[in-house]
Image (cartoon, helix red, strand yellow):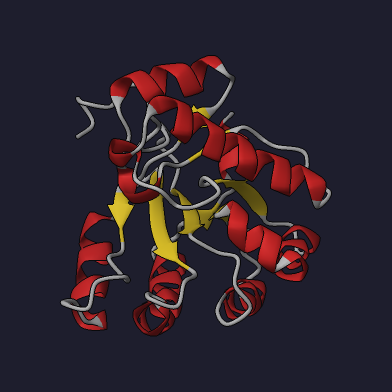
Length: 204
């Protein structure tokens, strides 16, 4: 996958024990505030890739992220698969998400993550030309998958954790149960191994 998408950021190049915790698909009132409270408990700031329509529906949760010092970024307006849209439709959806965040008081930081990691190479080229850094991941929790359980997820996360890891969880209803059962144990493990949690904006 990394060879197919060479223009994307998969991992941060560092020898330091830094980890970049990210969340996709929010903000929603049922899950996102729980994540914010847990991160506050451990004094962690994270990067949230947001669906524009959720920002529109839940501006108060959007503001909660900003007011608590987290970084918010673009995850399209409708959470559409780039493979299934025309290029024009895809770019429009990214722009709609940007406009919604700006409307709610946030200046776009030009970080973008494609939903499902599905994006065409020419879309990468065009989005990059507009100034966006495209961020994928080096460690996918799989908290959205009903075929997994917390033990399996934690074992995988611990095995593949390394300096510069970009880890993905989801503050969504679909992922809620597994995310809630794995996130805190993973955070504790990272801390015990000497890792420091960083915001993605520090690599720009």
